[in-house]
Length: 213
Image: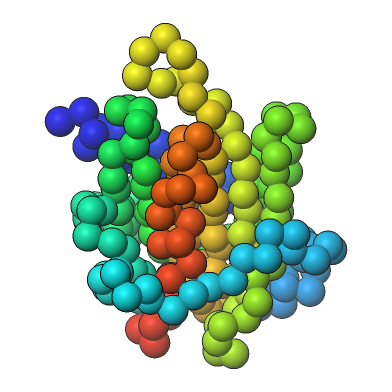
């Protein structure tokens, strides 16, 4: 049962800064969007959300929907903050590091999506130029939602054997309401990230009307 044991620690590592390192008092998250945490440059990735591809199935979570092809297995569990977490997973060429997408709710956050994404960008940038960190604000898809920020970076993780493996991460911070941020984390070994479906799966993510309930 090695794969199940690996799931939560890897995701906690990716989400830790987004969910925990931004503690302290914060103003209304909806007002933070115009603060210093806003990206100052235009997105260089040109990332946009997409409609569900024909070969994807819709998967419903708590307050959201997302799409994925059939080869991705679903696991519903709980995050470290007790909230429901959906994990979509497919084996990669590195046995211990599967291709993975996870969605987790951050309820009553102490800071906004803008501030949390800024903190993650800052922390990952400290690893040096090799981390290739980038942060951008995504085009709005729903006028009733707050802003969404995407942070992408690379880091080296232990592989199955003695060799380390570079992994590419995408983390989306969607401000779904004043009291809710939904995080979507997509990751895969960098050598196969572009040919994997994980970033495409992330881009099908959509918040539904029950998210802030």
